[in-house]
Length: 123
Image (cartoon, rainbow, N blue to C red):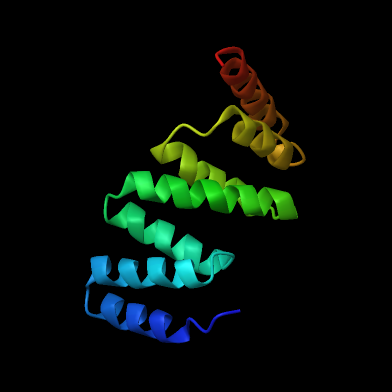
């Protein structure tokens, strides 16, 4: 695992000075060095959202959601909800979201299953 601590420290200093774009570039650089770091990916996505870089945020959140659902991480629900605000998740992502949320909210799961089915029918 690469040592990305210097990049993260630099990013934090940029954030303290209100330099969001510079901090984001450091987080993206750290992500290139350690692509499996979910915390860095989440922070980079949040900074992209704050900077209006929704396309990049959608890419980061989509990857993060896929990793979270693969590992069974329930925080995938939150990631999916962020993703849906800025883009149209794939029907497969919506299907996986429905599976994640089914235990807690049957109505939400049913709506997600219906949305996924509609998306698949349009393919």
